[in-house]
Length: 185
Image (tube, rainbow, N blue to C red):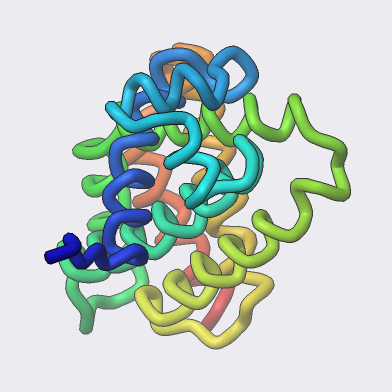
């Protein structure tokens, strides 16, 4: 009897294992053959699920975005004041700093190896999902403010990526929470 494969689940399993492979070598340095070897599958299997390295990375980005939002919302909870929510977000970033720095590095590396028009689609989709999550979590309606918060966090992570020890993620998020509270009143 032939083995029944849930192709969508298998694709997600492959994606789940790709993050570390990309993080170890970087987007620009790893090949589809190396990814297939790292996953323990044939290159034909990999190409069956992902027509190119770019397509694989874009699907990985969307999957990670979905997971990030789910995990963050689950851990951070709801019903906090804006200041409390930003303090909780700061603690969450500190707790998961290594992961977020790796992910920031991978995004920068991916963007560096693509034409700007090729990056726009996946970035727009993930940004909109993160933006909605920020609005929901902070209890705000203005997507421009949510984009500002995301840009702020991106800037903090880029600073930490550069090994700037003077940037305290929790402290900066607390300060932003106070500033947003004042701004939105």
